[in-house]
Amino acid sequence: VSLLFRKSVIAGVGLLGASIALAARRARVVEEIVGYGRSEPSLRLALKRRMIDRYFLAPGEFPEDADLLIVATPVEAIVPTVRSFRARLDSRCIITDVGSVKGRVVRQMENFLGEGIAFVGAHPIAGSEQWGPEFADADLFVERCCILTPTKKTDAKALHKMACFWRKLGANVESMNPSVHDRLLAVVSHLPHMAAYGLVNTLSRSRVDALDLKAYCAGGFKDITRIASSRPELWRDICLANRDALVSSLNKYIRHLDQLKTWIARGEAKQLEREFTRANEVRRQI
Amino acid sequence: VSLLFRKSVIAGVGLLGASIALAARRARVVEEIVGYGRSEPSLRLALKRRMIDRYFLAPGEFPEDADLLIVATPVEAIVPTVRSFRARLDSRCIITDVGSVKGRVVRQMENFLGEGIAFVGAHPIAGSEQWGPEFADADLFVERCCILTPTKKTDAKALHKMACFWRKLGANVESMNPSVHDRLLAVVSHLPHMAAYGLVNTLSRSRVDALDLKAYCAGGFKDITRIASSRPELWRDICLANRDALVSSLNKYIRHLDQLKTWIARGEAKQLEREFTRANEVRRQI
Image 1 (cartoon, each protein chain N blue to C red):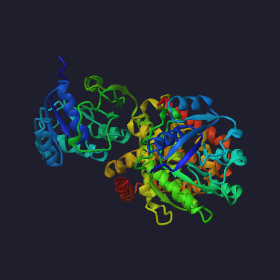
Image 2: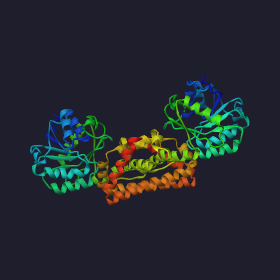
Image 3: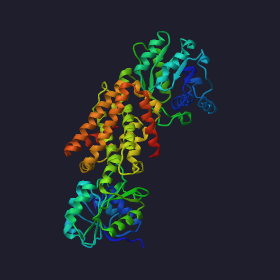
Image 4: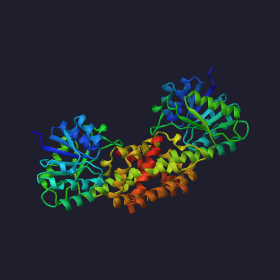
């Protein structure tokens, strides 16, 4: 028997929320899926495509018999969303999220939920620069890493159940401390986004004669800046929620670029070649 | 009649040199193609695949009746290569190159060639992070931009002939001053490469617990750092040849990242969102 939950609420039916719905339905781990969100067109589309069975728009209509609440909203909306359902949450309902930053969310959630309701922080490392349920994909989590971030307060049974849930969706499940997660993501995901945004805006602010620089961007520039078309509000929130770790990895990156710049200015050929060769080797292992 | 040249020497039969050979043959703009290079296996492969008609290894065997010399070596080898052929160059032979940096090369070439032999600097903005004639592609230049960099000293007929040559290979030909070219490329190509090398090496020097950070790099990181697998010696040379323009665009980029960092540290939500939205819009136009 693969059924893990009877009634699941997915709050925020965007790319991730709708993909979870598709994948969970295919894996038959949930009986009923109820959508919630602020954008009725998205909910209607998800209903029409049978991703969800029904939806509601007022927090007061949260189904009291739900045994799983997946919050798939942008990071800053996670805690307020759960707070708005608080009065109708059953003690058997497991709450989880899919936010890209964990430390602050997990701390706030545990503080205000207290004992009795289980929260399991989760972050499936999957997505794309597209957004909205129309891009949902039942295979989005297959062979991708899903990081769970339990703390001492996390209910062991709920943690186990969520690990099963993500495995059934095809993900490779790992557990780590929320702050370790945040430092990890600052390096492998949040920093590259800043690098890409920075590149695009450096380009847009550079002047070379009266040329339209955009017209000369070949494959390399396009690849490297594709993620700069990610959703602005989402990345604004990620930056603010993971402030400390991101500032620290930006510092490392800036120091690194400064070093490269010095080598170039001084014509240090050997240092440059060593540095580029090193990057080559690391890149090959990724 | 499309024939433009009788006997062309391609010095450096790597990805670019071999692609030019394939494309020129298909367009029937050259009668005979003679290869030259330091790697005999590459030349043998090019011969076997009929990209070239024959090859030579000693500069002293340069065919005196060649009417086109295309130097497709790494940037630092362009001038020394032409110098090694100097004694056998006919005054009717047009010399051109495909280097990614133009200012220094054009200056040096014009200085040592003097009057009588025409040099036309060229840079087809095409390529890939792969190298070697085995990846050659007759379509490499189709619909891509090829920048010619004439100066006051450039022979007008030779310039016209090379513009025709590149158009027959499918490229969109533009002309600009060598130093404008270098400042342009510093922003749209050389800087992104530095950004990618820097990201990969920042990752490789970061420690988060005992995690293998490489294992957590998702699509975004892979895309953005793909160009960091470009050939190290080639990029070392490009950095040194375009030192001033690259240092200046690195400075701009670093200042930009510093600004982002400050906004993040101070929690300036509006500034961040504005900045990311701006990048979004620019990215869409690329």
